[in-house]
Image (cartoon, rainbow, N blue to C red; front, side):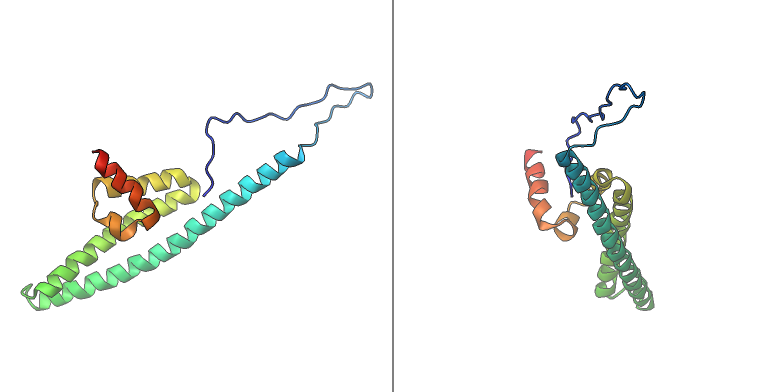
Length: 152
C-alpha cells in the first residue's frame, strides 16, 4: 500500500502571463511530476483492488463461519449441551463470525479510505480481541502489535 506524506504541499500548476496574442496557457507538467501522479494513481488502484479481493475472501470466511456455527449449535442443542466438543466448537465459530464481521467492515471502509479501514481493524483487535492478533493479523504486523503490548 502506498504511504503518502500528509505534510506535502500540493504544487499548483503555474500559469504563464498572457502574451501579445491575448491567450493564456498552462505549462505542461514535468515528466517526473506526471510519472509521480501516474504512479500514485496505480498504487491507489492496486491497493483498492487487493482490499476488494480480501473482502471477497472475508465474505467466504463469514459464510463458512455461519455454517459451522449453525451446525455446531444444532448438534449442541440435540445433545442438550452435554457434549463439550459441540459447545467449544460453537463458541469458536461465534468468535470467528465476530472476527469476520469486523474484518469485513474494515475492508469495506478500506476500499474508500485504506488508512481508516486498517485503523478500525487494529482498534478492534487491540481493544477487544488480543488473542485474535495471532490468528488473523498477518505475521509481518504481529511484531508491531507485540511491541505495543510490551510498552504498556
